[in-house]
Amino acid sequence: MKDKMTIILFSGEMDKAIAAFTLATTAASSGMDVTIFFTFWGLNIIKKTRFTIAKPQMLMQKMFNIMSTSKLPISKLDFFGLGPWMMRKLMKKSKMASLEDLMKLAKELKVKYIACTTSCGVLGLSKGNLIDDVSEFAGAMTYLAEAKESKINLFI
Amino acid sequence: MTPDRTLDCVGLFCPMPIIKTKQEMDTMKTGEVLEILADDPGFEKDLPEWCKATGQKLIEIKKEGGLLKGYITKTK
Image 1 (cartoon, rainbow over the protein chains, first blue to last red):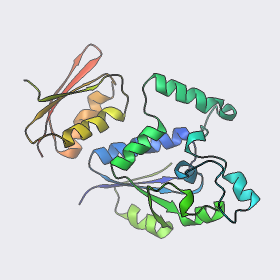
Image 2 (image 1 turned 90 degrees about the vertical axis):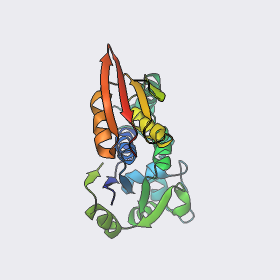
Image 3 (image 1 turned 90 degrees about the horizontal axis):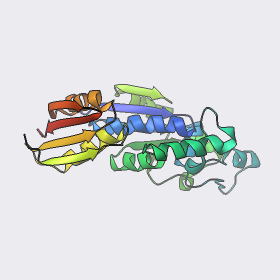
């Protein structure tokens, strides 16, 4: 059986997501099965669009849904969006892979995505609001079952 | 030794050289030798670890100034 790695992606910041996807793609490239469990702010990374407005969404849910992959903040020195813009420029200049590049690779390398249904419920997100790469919608028990058999487990 | 293929990863940072190495090896035949050129210093340690994890054979990794040259054989 293949070695396994599981990641809980709780954060919705670009820099943390890049760290998670760097490890996920590297693990998948070295022959491991990788599962990422997206919960809370991590769901912003796998949303199709910003300002995700699902049918019966409350105002507060709408307010929590203003971020998506293309507009994620960074965890330090965000400066209301100036930080991420500068970070992207620097990364492009130094030929570092962007979050979008890494996510594309993750898909090619068959990294598995699970979205937390509880968080989806709180934030008013449904299946259609998330990218098609999400293969499962599940809860803590499913994550635990995956994590139990995995050698590496990270909370990011 | 003459490699069957050369993969140029100069200018790329982790994790790209490892991912590109994997993708290139996927398209190669058993017994073929891949030469990888890289200048991310971390690659010197990462390539041997990748070979250990995947069971591919590391022939050598050498440093020529700031340039790293890795040679690996596809074993499976």
